[in-house]
Image (cartoon, rainbow, N blue to C red):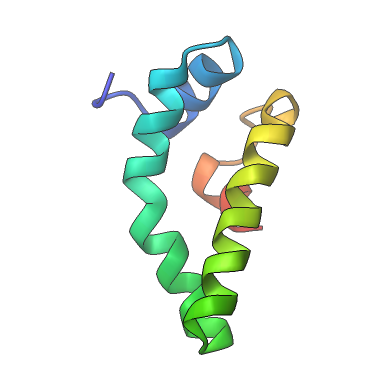
Length: 76
């Protein structure tokens, strides 16, 4: 599963495969946190935004349609 594309993993997660979410989280955890930290400059705020973002991914997983790459969908 680790070799799967981000989009394939997201579709698998939407279908109920928790391991697919874990793979996506592992791929993007550092980049996403650094993105927030770079923009807000405060570790506590960056951490809050980071957690909120993953919560939104979980809540919106059924709206992922694959028209845009997962990375673009995540960072928007």
